Length: 97
Image (cartoon, rainbow, N blue to C red; front, side, top):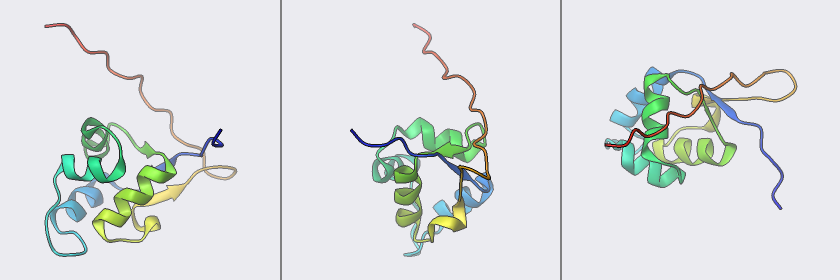
C-alpha cells in the first residue's frame, strides 16, 4: 500500500492559465491534454484554473509542472507541518438529465 501524500497547493490559478497558453516548448496545452498528462479528470484542471479548487496530489502537481515545462515550486506549494492544505468544497454530484 502506498503512503498517503500531503496535497500540493496551487500558488496562483492565473499563472496556471498563462502557462497553459505558452508552455516550456512554446505551444499551448489544452485542459484535456494537461489532465491526461496528470492522470486526473479534466474537470479537476478546470477547477484549478478557475480557483474553485486549490489542491492536487504530489504526483498530479509534478506531472502538471513537467508538462508545462516549469519547476514544481513555480506553481505549487508543499503542505504539511507548516502549511495547512485548504479545505476543498464537497464534490458536486451529477444531476440526472
